[in-house]
Image (cartoon, rainbow, N blue to C red; front, side, top):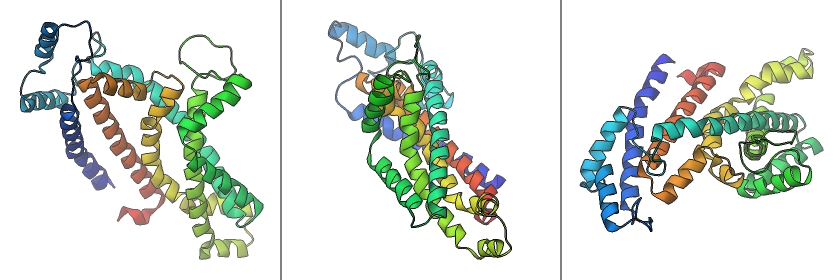
Length: 309
C-alpha cells in the first residue's frame, strides 16, 4: 500500500505540469488581455501595466517565469484583486467551497446509501422502484435547474434558509450553506443510490450470504456486518472523483446562490482574463482531484485486500 501511495504522489508532479502547461497556452491563445476591457485606461497605461506584470515579454519567457513561481508554490499577484495574491484569494475562498462540498457529501452518502440499500433488499418491489425512479430523476435534473426549484420552495415559500449571499445576518432556521449543499448533495445522492443498489445486489447473491441466512443470522446483521463491506466498494471508488466534483462542481451552484467560494472566483477570473488566478485555481483543483482519488483508492484497498494487488 505504501508503494502505491508513493507512486501516486510522484505522479502528481507530471500531471500538474501538463495541466498547467495546457491551461497556460490555451489561455494565452485566446484573443484579448486582462486590461483590454478597461475603458478608462489609455494605451500608455495599458502598456505600463503589461510591462509591470511581464505580459510584454515573449510567451516562452512568461511560461518559464511562471513555472519557476509555481515551483515555489507562489501563483503570483491577482489582476482582479490588486491588494491580494492568488494564494490569498484561494485561502479566502476555498474554505467556503470546502464547507459546501463536505456537507453535500454527507447528504449524498446518507440519502444515497440508504436509498440504494433499501432498493437492493427489496428487489423488484415498490421500495425498489420508487427510490430508483427518484434517483434516475435526480441524475437527469442538472444542478442549475434543481437549485432554483429548491430555492423557490424551501427558501422563498417556506423561508427555511437564505437563497442568496453568505455573510450577514439572517433570520431563517438554517444557515446559508444549507441550500447549496442540499442542491449538490441530492444530485450526487442519485449516483450513490444507483451504485449502492448494484453493489449490494451483487454481494447479496454470494454464497456466504446464503450461508449466513441458513444459520439464522438476523437480516439486519447480514446487511450491516456482511453485505455492506463489499456492497459499498463501488461507492468508495466513486468517492474520490465525487468529492472533488462536489467542490469543483460548485461553480454553477455558487453562481446560482451568489456564494463567494472558489468556484465563483474561478468564473470571475475567466471573464476578467485574470491569468494568474486561472492558473492557480486550475492547478489547485487538479491537485485536489489527484489527492481525493488517492484517498478513495486507499479506502478501497483497506476494505478489499484483493485490490492491493
